[in-house]
Structure formats: structure tokens, C-alpha cells
Length: 428
Image 1 (cartoon, rainbow, N blue to C red):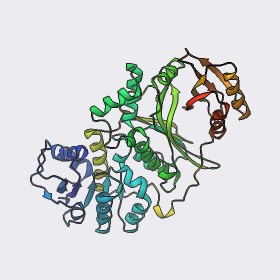
Image 2 (image 1 turned 120 degrees about the vertical axis):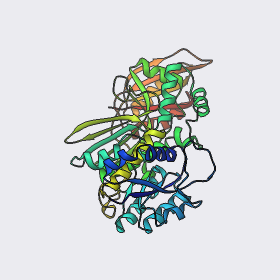
Image 3 (image 1 turned 180 degrees about the vertical axis):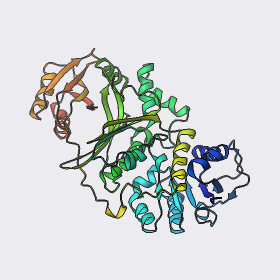
């Protein structure tokens, strides 16, 4: 009989418990599909005695995940603790140096330290698999590294944070303002301990950085991503977008241009009848575009016990079958440093601002836009609010640099109250 693949699981939160359940409940199925039994040798977590709804009796226990990572009876170290540094990084490095393969769901660690970890793994003949780190149960990492390996990827795009998508769709459905829905999501347990990881676009940015590395054969560069969260999106923006035939999504886009690699994670307007526009609730969607295959749309649960544990098991089965892939689709030592490029791809923009209610105010705004080379496609002034005139403008296609010049010069007109909101209208 083929020897079992023995795994050690560090982190018994939602995902770790999900992995334990699948291994316990589907042992025969896993063995059949992988060609060998998959067994849990040992586990590690903060609290051994916590009631997790699944028994961990019979498994070895380590208080220290680094000790778990170096146990002789562990073949694959499964890191499900989270965090870019600290125990997760220390245990992952220890596992690789001790001759183990690694499966992780830790997007932050890979987005920050992925290059050095990949080089360490590959220099020792080991693998790091991370399907669960990006878009939960959606097999997008395998789609890029394997299914689309014969393509020149032209664009990676997607909604990669379910919490933000829940907030934005809930605002539209309920007519409730951002803060009310944010508080609701917090009470439901949808937000990270640091909510800015979600609503600030950081979590989704980590995922985009990993996909961009695979897609374009470059070193992971999370620091080069243009990040903007959803905190400024108002219910008025949601309603106006809907009336125009759009919906607002926190959208990640990566594409290689003649100037370098563009990576941005920001709110965008997308057509309401597009696949991205129809995405509701906490679901994720990733759109991959290749020169041979055209456009591929992957949709599914982006988080949760079952979907994320499913992705972890897919990587474990891959290792059990003997499949040996480089971390980011090609040898880490050969990955180039991409030249970061600020987004210059032209697009229309939606602008919302409040103007002082006096003659000539709108003319001054139009002049500033014209001086920046930006023409107005349509404009609407809504009901006055205590001396202020809310104005909505949709521009013709322009580049972000020109728009930023106009936004900066608005202040000098003396007619703009507060900070204008600018949202890109993405071509999907």
C-alpha cells in the first residue's frame, strides 16, 4: 500500500476546522483521487481545549507552530494562521528548511514575502501552494498557472473581497448609507479584526499582487498597487450609478503596458448587465483575459469554511499526486522586477462634488476640466442642500493623471465644498 501523505495543520480557526472535517469525512474519496491516503499527523493552535465542533483527539499537538513544522512525522505543513510575519512566516520558513512542502491560505505573507519564500522553497526542491489565498474556493491560481499557461495574459480583473461586495450590494438593495451597512457587516462577523484590511482594499490588493505575479512572470510587488477603499462611496453614488445603468464594485485590475505593470484596486463603475455588475452579496469573481483564449470568468464563494478548505485540499491532493509546480508558475529566481506604472489606460470617470450655490460656479469647474484636456459627456445638478449645489459629472475618456490635475485645481476655484469623489468607469 502507498504510504500516506502526513499533514500538520497550524491554525484551527474556520478554515483549519474545515480541513479537518474534510479529511475525516472524505478519507476514501481523497485517497482515491490522490492515489494515496491523506492523514493528519499533528495540529497546532492557540488553545488546545477550545470546542471547535470537531474532534482533534488522536492527532499530535504542538503549542509552537515552528515545532509542528519540523516534526519528523509531517510531510506537508499546512499554514492557516494568517499574518504577514510572526509565527506564520517563522513556521513556514522552518518547514521549508526541514524538508517539508507547504500549503497556505496566507495572502498577506505571500504578498509581502512571497519572492523570498518561493526562492527558499525552490532552492531546496520543495513547493508552496496557495490556492486558498486568492478568492476562496475559486481555482484561479490553478487556472493561471496551468489552464492558461499557453496564453499571454492581457488583463486580470475581479471582485476579490466578499465583504466589500456585500456592503456595496446591500447599500443598493436597502437604500441604507455606508456607515449603517458597515456596522451591520461588523455585527455579522464579516469584517476582519482590522476593518481597513477589507474596506480599505488591502486584503483584495494582496490577492491581486499574487495573481499579477503569476500572470506576468514578475516578482510580487504589493507596494506598487494603487489602493483606494470604498469608505467614500455614498448612497447617492450607488443610486446615481444604478440610474446610469452601472453598479459600483471594488475592482482589482492588473495589466502590462508599454510603461510597466499597472496594478490598481479601487471602486469602479461597471455595467449593471455585465457579469461583474450582476455579482451580488459576498461572492467573488475573477476575469482572466488571454491572447488565445479570450475572456474567462470564474465566479464562486470567496471565503468561508467549506470553500476555503476545499481550496486547501486541492493543493494537498496535488502534492499527494506528485505534482511539483513552481510557486508562481515559473522559477522564482527568474522572475523579473516589474517596472511599476501608474494607471494611464484612458477611461470615462464619474465625478461627484458640492459647489457653492452662486452664479458661474459650474463654469469654473468646466474651465478647470477643459484646461486639463477633459471634456464633459454629461452633467446633472441635483436638489440644492443648504447653500450647496450637488453636481454629478461623467467625463469622456481621459487618463488618471489629467484627472488628478483637475481635482487638484478645483480647490483654487473657491467654489468646491469638501473633497470631490472620482470613480473610474471600467470597460469590462
